Image 1 (cartoon, one colour):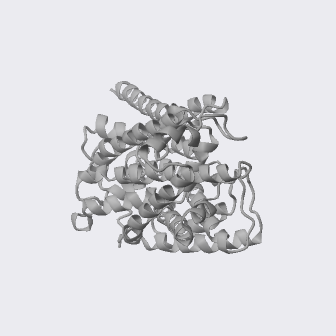
Image 2 (cartoon, rainbow, N blue to C red):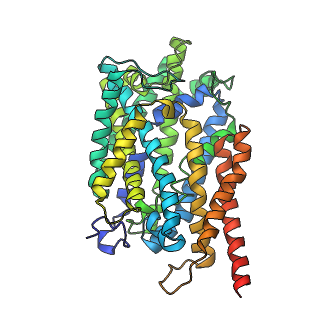
Image 3 (spheres, rainbow, N blue to C red):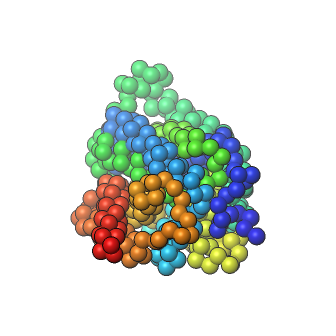
Length: 448
């Protein structure tokens, strides 16, 4: 029986009220990785105005994309991304996509395990990774990551209901924790009022040269990064798997809780913690969420980092499990998700993904987002907003391959020349949609 509706539309009796989605998104995006991204902005030499304005507009664009692009498709089809792709593009296309999708999801969830491990590393003797670290730092580090990865995987494997419950339980505490970290850091930077903040913000986010090995960030880097860091979820339709459970389309606004309470507030707060660390010791450039939070609010900070990683790893492992399960629908989703969790845990032992998170997130979105353009064109243009029936003709499978891989090939050229990956996400999405629509029109005329 399809208890988690992996293969069938979510029935009305299984759909949830809108408030639970606000909690889910706030919990997922008030994440342990926010403790990484905030400091990395400073490491990238961002200026105060560029950061604050770029985050304001970029997160707004992300919310609008969820609400007006992803939510209408989720509310109409009520299917996971993987099942919908199978119906539209065919099973073989889904196999190729799911392999890429699952691998990237595993890498992202692995970075979240890495982040949570830095909190445990504060109280357990372990060599912590540095800013440009690539490899595991010792057996103690491997053991800590293994235990955390197993716990995270267990809750993800249980299913959507537990994913939502964990988010509902933890979201309020996480938001308070991030806010507390920022408020504690401000006086240490000489900020006691809004006037002080306006006067000293240029000393916190200096806009100077980036640290060695980091990309120099401007307003446009921040805007496109904040818009597209979750591109696989909104442009790429990954959140069809979550929003299909929404009773109302109003749930499409729920990502705003994650974007502004999570991303905006959490990134700024984490930046402040890193600024305090650099002011105390300019040579200490390590980006370690655990020590940063512990230095601000003590044990509560460590719990905040661990739980924040948990609430984000949960839905990410869950999505990766759905992607792999779609390859063999007859298998147990619980067992498949546990196997995915093993891969996530192994990746988490290598800190390179977490330490290069700004670059990885951009690449992750650029690879996966264009597939959402296929569904968007199919739904809004070809289907006029109506779900497909069994009698409807399918576009040829080769068109889907050509559009997706062709858009990636074209974007690979500027990427190989050092263009920031988040700048390429929207062009890749548009290219894929245009190529798909054009090839479909040509084949229809040829057949006619």
